[in-house]
Image 1 (cartoon, rainbow, N blue to C red):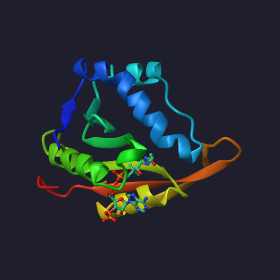
Image 2 (image 1 turned 180 degrees about the vertical axis):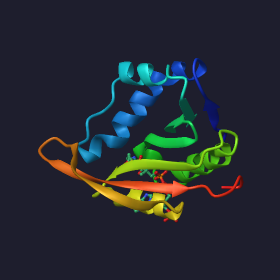
Image 3 (image 1 turned 120 degrees about the vertical axis):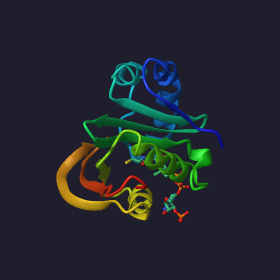
Image 4 (image 1 turned 30 degrees about the horizontal axis):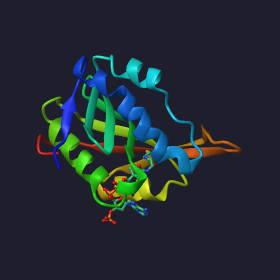
Length: 154
Ligand SMILES: CC(C)(COP(=O)(O)OP(=O)(O)OC[C@H]1O[C@@H](n2cnc3c(N)ncnc32)[C@H](O)[C@@H]1OP(=O)(O)O)[C@@H](O)C(=O)NCCC(=O)NCCS
């Protein structure tokens, strides 16, 4: 599997692809899909890194050695086949280049697939944000998870 690792301006051309994958991946959760315009705006930021292939993508923001996973999505037909793990692995290898010291993310407390995936990569829950994500008919709390990089091998 070949992954592109892109920053602006090249990343911007994949805004529509990201929106399509995001909508299909998050539809079963009841979460709101991000629009093409939202992705266009995000992918213009100089701090953004997009890792993508045709069925999946990982969007990260890196500011002064602190990375935040903004979103991660795999098309439902391709889930549980290692795509997300491969994207994350590629990102962690890239982290040394950007001198990343830590990576944080927010994940819905009922998203067991994502939580299991992040735990596999040694993310730990550092706090809970109550009723953080809005779903169609309810609010769901978020786990804030963090992974620290203690050396350049991550
Ligand atoms: C969460 C998501 C990104 C995982 O992507 P994926 O490509 O299916 O994940 P992988 O195949 O790389 O799986 C890696 C690990 O995730 C976990 N996992 C993946 N799918 C799972 C499922 N359906 N149930 C339980 N665990 C699952 C497992 O721990 C798996 O490791 P294993 O193979 O050793 O059991 C994908 O399901 C998705 O896009 N979901 C909707 C969007 C979303 O929730 N994004 C994350 C928001 S923070």
